[in-house]
Image (tube, rainbow, N blue to C red):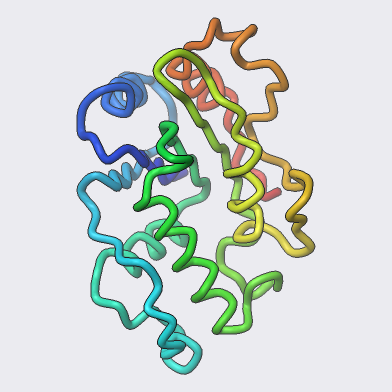
Length: 187
């Protein structure tokens, strides 16, 4: 089984690198597809609506390839540091996913190829694990039919209510524990 791991930091070093190295060192039966946004070129949506007819985004960058990697994966993990509030490339990725799925008429439908994918969202600062609720609210509209903008109603893999207490603020341990308990049953 394959998990797309989105490393949302604009840096190639630091905590995202530490998390990637930890994942590579795990002895798990899964394969991992690391989507490093630091290496990706993702523009904001051009609002051209050509995707409505073409069924793919016409902006020439890495978005369409990243979307295909999500489609090919059995699960998607978003790992993001706090940037005002999220990294701009992650914001652009979410914006483009929303535009494409909306314009093609498949957002909030079973025809969306991401519906039911297992997913986890991790959000951290230099000092602790942060509340990932806002990112989960955005992400769930790509993963389910009948999503909410007000409450997390998707069954994310990581549902730890007090991760700082459980993991001592260590996001690497949080990601590791979640991966080791990962299930590929669709949500």
